[in-house]
Image (cartoon, rainbow, N blue to C red; front, side, top):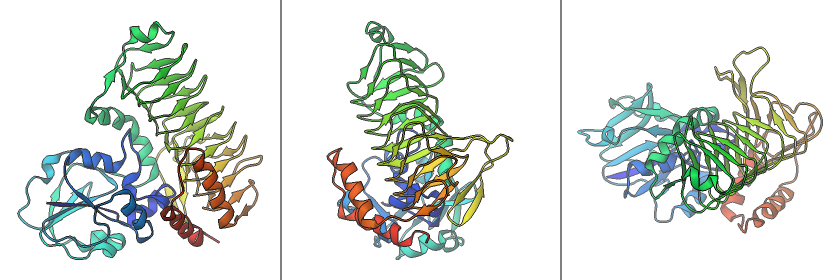
Length: 404
């Protein structure tokens, strides 16, 4: 049976993180949404349906897969923004079937698919409303804060699906001056460096350290938490439960219940809470975000041209790829900063900064595209990674379609 991971129009509500990647590349817990699907269907060949402007990058990263083309034969379509629970939900189909969780479409099975690509992006629910319905167990990711809130629960779940891990011996690390508080365990996927004075507290949840992680002196990590491959936790850092740091990041200061996707730095003092930071971002020294209103009412977040009532008291900051903040930058509760933007200056920033904008807290300026690309190339070259033509194409699309 063929499997297609697809995007629907829900990608729009996952901005700014979804602007530069398909929704299935978003992280929740340790793994991305796609990795969770692949773990459920080991050995299967996957194909993809996504927005046209990101399709070239999807093809490049997944050679051999079919992207945005019809596949013949029995096909299972799975939403790229859903987390599925039971493999048995997909074990047997007698006829074309729509799959629902929480009364929302999360997939469908077709015996003879036609070209649904554009319709999926516009009105997936409308296409399949007449099919036989099957209720399954799945979590739907509707907004960026869903990923953040669910991460503390998915770190332990992801660990159960990971192979080749070793559990750190508290006594062994105690001899080197580090302290592991036992409980749910500290799990390693390779060699790590934990300096004297570091404290890893797994009493309320497990901690995952990938290969090449460095924990510097006097850093404190409280589980559940995950630190990705090649990342560094700086001296005196305070990492609270529900935090997932992706690969090749440098993190310091205070971080609570947040996701830093990959290749981003928050090296210095400052608070980051209930936030999701994309790739290739730099958070300047002293940058702070609020994640709780003083009147203890639910936080509202602006996503482009609409405002969403999150229903949650704790909502922080969401920053798209290639964005940066200057020293002592301050963000209000429920703030959004787009792709390739910059914030600096005294006082609170606007709660919504579009993509490709520089904000000094009072006015917004749109920099030239060439200058932004030059900066992106310089940043990525420091990690020996080249900005691809496909990524430039995506950034150009965002630049041309960003608010005027």
